[in-house]
Length: 458
Image (cartoon, one colour):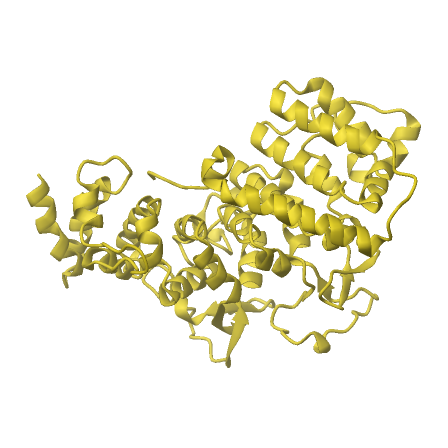
């Protein structure tokens, strides 16, 4: 059997698409972890060790090229690489800048039919800090154009060209421009949120739901550089890269926003992968203490997150953190008035988050936001204690209950009589949280919650 499978490998680059498809369909069952011939077929010859990077073998190079092939071949090639990318040996060969540029461009293109598989692959690759850094700093070439019969502009990523991502007809004739990749991925993620409600693929403006981009954002925000991207004001119009070009709109709203503000509403989305990745992204961003005011403040207030000197509307994350913990309970009038309008008079069928890992992540984010006096006072004034008090009564998981009790101690505990100035306190807490975050990152491989972001055997 092994010899027969090895004979199929050269057919991956055959001129006949039927031969390529047949060879790939027979090799695909060997890509999941635990398959008997996986190592022999896909990992033999990778080598590497010490300072030497793993070498790219012919079969891996072929699979990367087949991701650009016609739809049925590209679909199986993406599936194969998603399954194989659970191995650290393939992170290097799959994270070369040219291939990552194709993957990101492919995801950004609304017409990419295998965009969800590409998002899964990017999720696995960004488990590596090297791949994260490439995505954070990446720029991709796009052409802005108006589809026939539509008023809104769309972006055509030039490097997404492939058999399963058709070029618009007529071909866009606008000028190429280079844009930061991460804001484009965030916009694609937001647009994909409602695509699952449309069963007919031909009627979707974006073919993929892109729920797995949430775990990409969670991976990226593990690093301080990644957090800064999500907590640095960006123009609402992503084609404007110069902040000096941004002015107020006619209704007086500033045309700047924190990228994190775009993803926080999805803590209540129907897809658990999206909810979990967004909750983890928010929690990771909470390690940046200087951003706490921006994370908590309402949109009506403009807040600066150092080292940036540009103010943008607050992210107003509290209601999105509390909704997963909130149930149908009714509160006294005094307690009710503290709550955000979205948390008042919830329907009798309101259910709490079913996934214990997401619940504990949300509670841990609230604990991080309690690390300054200003944060504790703000959370007290917005009814956080009242919500978690009822949540604690219903919670069955002991680990979650323990974290809720930690949160309550911080909210209801006695405050010190002498208080440091805001900036001094932020600097002290920032150093403490960075130290704690470094420890948590170093033990990431032992954390079963983080391992859930690894996609295998599809």
